[in-house]
Length: 139
Image 1: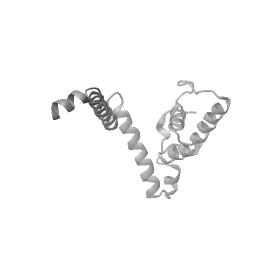
Image 2 (image 1 turned 60 degrees about the horizontal axis):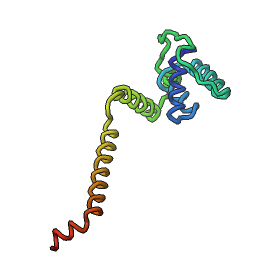
Image 3 (image 1 turned 30 degrees about the horizontal axis):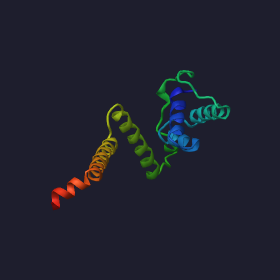
Image 4 (image 1 turned 45 degrees about the horizontal axis):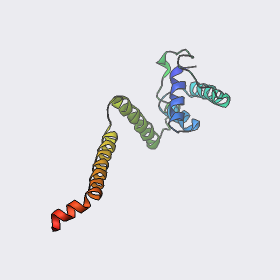
C-alpha cells in the first residue's frame, strides 16, 4: 500500500469530500485503480475503528506505476473529467504555494475586521460625546 495515496484520501476526507469522490479523483489523476481501492479499504477500516492513520506507517512504493489513468488507458476519458482533475490539481498546487503566507481571502477578511473595528470605535465615541458634539455644532 502506498502512503501517498492513503495521505491523499485522508486529506480529502478532512476537507469534507466523500471517500468515493476522493477515490475517483485519484484514479482520474493517474493512480492505479487497484492501489487506490486498497488504500481506500485501509482508510475505511481505520475510520470504522476510530483510528487516525499516522504518517509513515505504510511504506511507499516507487511512483513509476503512476499512469495516465484507468479510463485514459481505454481512451474514454471525457473533457469534463479531465477538467475536474486539473482544477483540483491546480487548487492543491495553489494551496501549497500559499502556505505560510496570507492568501487574498485572508487579507480581505483582515481589512474588513479593521474597518468594522474602526467604525465601531467611531460609533462608540459619537455616543459617548454626543452632547459635546451637538454643543459644538449648534452652540
